[in-house]
Length: 287
Image (cartoon, rainbow, N blue to C red; front, side):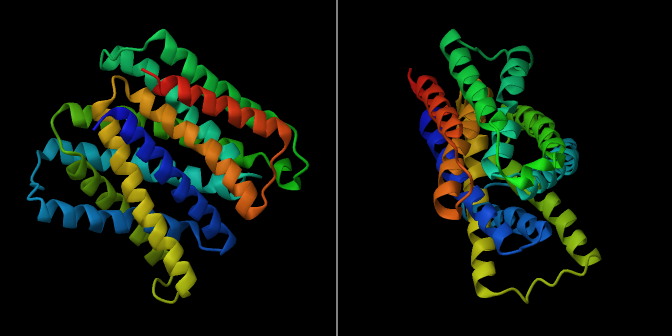
């Protein structure tokens, strides 16, 4: 298994995940329920895997406390910011392109923290991905929804959370923790927060229509695969920023499919931006 193959898994699962998040918004599924799908089902999946594979769930208390803090201040809060931005943005791809450009910050910090390499070719690829993402964002839109700029502030919150989450997850893998150990505890702690939210807001879990249950189920499975590929990628790639670049680039496909499936806006400037992002990904994957 190479970091490039894992990066492809990140891209595919990301596209599926965020298309179904878009569908969930159209079905008026609350953010709390979307969060429930993204974290609770993966918690069960990682627990079952660890039990079957005989992966010990006993880890140092200091790591458990560290994961708890990560779950609250980076994973849960970042996901809330991201979902609110997706809900308010004129096209989900716009918000995701910006929030996932945290690849730049992660790549630079990794050089200093983990002594990770960053070659000239990869710098060019990352700049292409981020630069053409800006083209997608700053193109003029006729959508009245874009008159509200609140989605930008939520997006920047997600940007900061995702950048430091990538650094922390890379740190955990460098300390010998297994991906499914990290993700089980991370998802478990976030799930507890979400269940408390659902309880306090008196959201009924078992009165959803079958179509909505299916949407939440797909979100959960895609989230599990996406996060697993991310953590594997952080362990295998020379610089975690490479995996984050693939993650950011995947949103160009989300933008395309959102326009095709959900009839979201997609002008010619957006298309140019998407092609630029895809060219950056191609350069990044070339050895």
